[in-house]
Figure 1: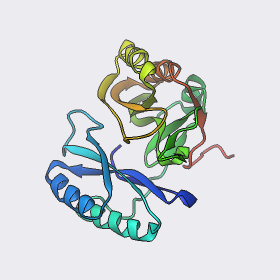
Figure 2: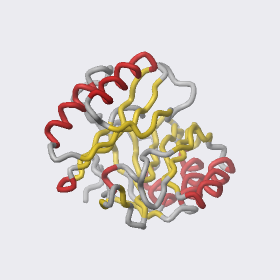
Figure 3: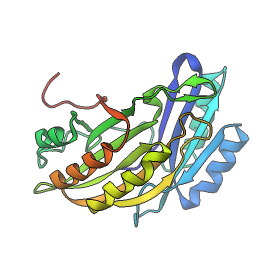
Figure 4: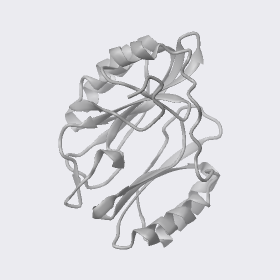
Length: 234
């Protein structure tokens, strides 16, 4: 459930994303990003007690030369062990009752890179630097299930929260036994101000889905279809 993601907002010429790095790679990555004039907006963990120890470095830029920014980002990626390009895995959700997960989370998940993935987008218009941020730029809630067999799963992701939603969401996660990994911002000047609560748990997939559904319900979001491998057709 780790990796690097870089998004481009078409005509706005904005780039936003995060790069997964080891602790040993972080210094080189930071130097490369700063030398290129890209903004670092957050450095944090997404997981607990994982090996190798990874950090996620969020980057942002506004540019009239997106191809140049892409070259800078490629140079940054090359300071890390991130493979290029990423390869999507075949569906591996046979041990999950995906219809049940869909019903509990009131959406429709997709197989993506070995996980069963749900995305929920903010109902408000999110703006940064006076530009609307499309949901594809990452200001979203993500719920990801990694099948472990016999109906069990590891669940990981982040809730996109306004300030008033943070405590209710955390309480909902903890009532279901889900660990809160990090609470932080991903960007610096977005409106409304968004905080991201990253979480992790292992257990019965349906039970975890109920907990995540309760947490998602504390926030002003709506389910959004995402690219992936749909086993059931459109």
